[in-house]
Amino acid sequence: MPGELIWLAVSLLSSVGLVVALGTSSTARYEFERNGVQQQRRKAAAPAPVAVAAPTTAATARAEQPAAAAVATHPSGRLATVTPMVTGWWLLDGPGAPLAGPFADVIDADWAAFSLGLPDTAKPVYGTQREDGGVVRRQSPSERVWLEELGRQLDRLPADWDELITDDDALTTLAVDVTAALLEAGLPLHDGDGPARASGGACLTPRPELGGLVVAWRQHERMSVQQVRGAEADEAVQRTMSSAVAAVLEQLGFAVEPYGSTGGHLVTASGR
Image 1 (cartoon, rainbow, N blue to C red):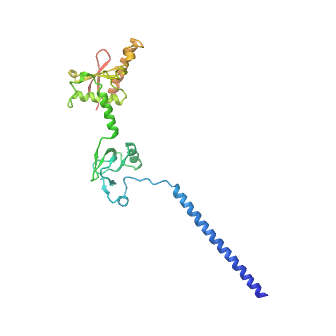
Image 2 (cartoon, rainbow, N blue to C red; image 1 turned 120 degrees about the vertical axis):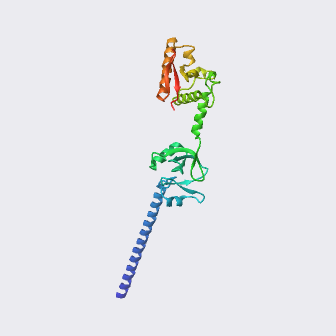
Image 3 (cartoon, rainbow, N blue to C red; image 1 turned 30 degrees about the horizontal axis):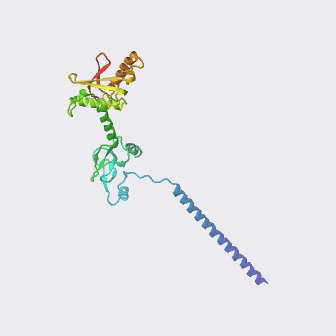
């Protein structure tokens, strides 16, 4: 009988040990799996890393370069990936390789300059990167759109300009500068011979004998021709708008002086 009790006690102790061992193993496994799931969730929730076009260390740059890419050293000590024949916006600080780029637009380039803590001398430039790392400046898409719009405005110049316009003529340059300044201010030229002639706008008349041009304003035909608001209103608005145009040009650095008795102004020097 004592032997049977001892055997029973041993069996019970063994069973308890087995249960404890199994419980410990299950708990450990549960903890391991739970931690793994949490790590996966954290990885999934973590934001994707942002790639910086200009690494700050040579080791990082070498590690991140594809086999066909080279690394150009900028005089400031920063490194940028050389991607020949890629066109876009780059951050330049003088000649040589760019500090960072390329970027899709100038806003992205400006933001990168701020976020990377680049010096104020780093400027966004549109161009194509050469094999040696330098950037060949190109005309940006927005600049092409602007020049096309400016060209359409210059087509509105009256016939008086036809015999005067040449590539190296100072008066032609002045007319282009005045037209550009007015367009930037939101003031179009009057389309005297075109489909938009009724809309009004700024009028530029050449005065080569005075070394300049006369600028005045013409209202919409409803006011200037039909005079739906009366002759006095037409005259008052014309003087007010002509003075406003002259004030805009003066604010932009042009040499402006009153001309004649109709409210026009003579512009003799560019604001550039």
